[in-house]
Length: 272
Length: 266
Image (cartoon, rainbow over the protein chains, first blue to last red):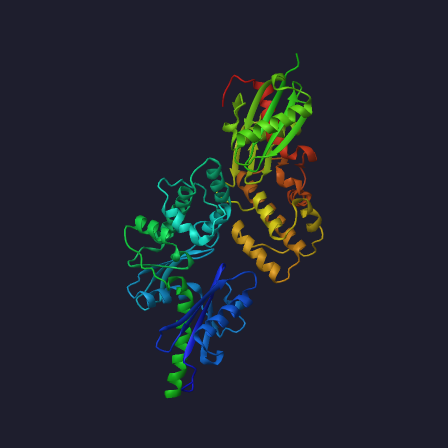
């Protein structure tokens, strides 16, 4: 290892469903990512994902200058050096991945946020579903559970739907019942799933409109992996979304960037 | 010839049937899970009540359905809304009743009516599962507790754990996180019951309460919920007998059948 300071920083995003980690080198290039299910033990999830991140990169913990935590479990990461809200992290991470970002739509396991961002990644305004799980990834996992289908197959099956059903209930709990009722009425699973995707896309459109739609729109969070959701949102919005392999990690990336700020500030102090 | 009537309440979670005679005496009742074929559940439920009453379907002069799936009961002569049915049922059980609060599997209903049973105001939970029986079921499931053990568990609670989330989905995560922090299951269960009761009271406040207040619905099978409601609501609260709590709307539907026959449709 060279230099006085360890050259890496890490961000860990402890979400309600999955825990994500990103390793950044000093030039802000992504040096590694890791992802696991959060499960019940938040601190254990954070430790496990961090250990995996380091092992994959072939690093020891002392190679990392600062670890920043974000997500709803950020205060339970025992080894975290700083905590940043997931709003700030998603904004920063999205702008880092796609500098033209004007609005971020973050769709996670239990919450969906629309964030209007400045060119430097700062947050101008945001709104989110703070009281209700409607229109979140949870709606999709509920659909997957009642249809007994792996979550990662949902998008592919939904995309083959031709006559989507209308899911009229807002509440995720009631939607489970409604989905089962469609099954009982003999509706094909792909049409039901396509309807579920449309219901969520409609919900998040309302959030985006509330925060004020500023192109370009970057889609982050775990659900940004879901190609059917991307299609539905693009159809509703009438424009393309900025989305990629790294967008599920945008929150952890943002956290790692805040950690890197601290690393750089430390270097300036040494130099000054 | 004695006239008999049946009321069938096709609720989101359970379907209830009550058979009464021309003097409004309850002969039998029956309950089935509604499932995804409410018409079949209604048929099974009615058959069960008839068998218990020692009657055949031909003995019935009228069948009145109510509940969210009331239009799916193919044997109905007429259908009435669950608010109308609950109002009639509550007034039959408690003639001085002025309002009814019904805590069901997926719905919470509060309804206020005048001395002739005309509805003055009502409020439903509409879009949200918060505080419904579905929420309690999920809480019990997370903790691996059968529904018949809920009361016994909740009664051990000394320090009920407050549940701050309104959304039933968020409440689930909150409960899991409390379990991880070694909060006692009895305190969580009692906390969930309190949350349900608070939500129902909120809906009642919106509709406005008028004494006497009749409590109804499947959630009252949890004696703890019934006790909490009675504590919070003070005097002038009427709790139907254990076997009747879930059948107030079905009873009201049957009563409407005897009183108004099958001709008029509403």
